[in-house]
Amino acid sequence: MRPHHIERVLFPEDVIARRVEELAAEIARATPDPDLCVIGILRGSFVFLADLIRCSHRHGLRPRLDFMLLHSYGGGTVSSGEIRVLRDIDLDVRGRDTLIVDDILDTGRTLAFAAARARERGAARVRTCVLLDKPARRAVPITADFVAFPCPDEFVVGYGLDYDSLYRDLPWIAAVTFTDDTRDSTAIAAARSPSEVPP
Image (spheres, rainbow, N blue to C red):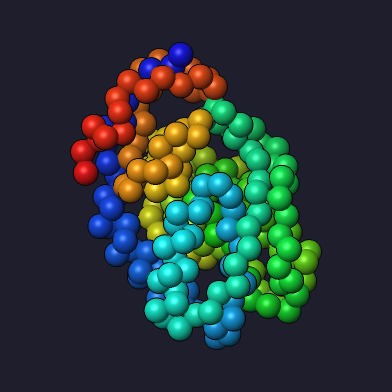
């Protein structure tokens, strides 16, 4: 079992809420057609995406929503580098402005894969939006069109982001501190309850 601590909140709940509202306004200003196709990358983006599309409605967009379920990380903390499609989109994006939404731009492989997939389906314009941008680990040349927050080179959880399927429910984003040197263990032991993390 792998001990770790969650004790440093990087992005509090109120800061996230304000920034998502701003981001929706930025997307709306840059989108001439309000009938925007929005593709969420599961599972990490679902909390961010839910808030983002509610905000986008207030800024005049009428998003058509679908999801892709892509697998990259497995149970560890380091990307495997291989992208597998577990669920593809059903939405017809041909000739439409399309926005790909993901939780974190890390190596860039997942976002680049999803954007290429939308282009193959005939999307007129494909743009990308991420909650967090972590450039330190970039492995492919990609830059997100819309970014909520730059992220330090730390493993983070909360607001949809997980560690081995835990902590997605946290309303803030916090850094995980591991107490050993093994960065890709698939085991997990909660040394501190999420309820103990400071707001």
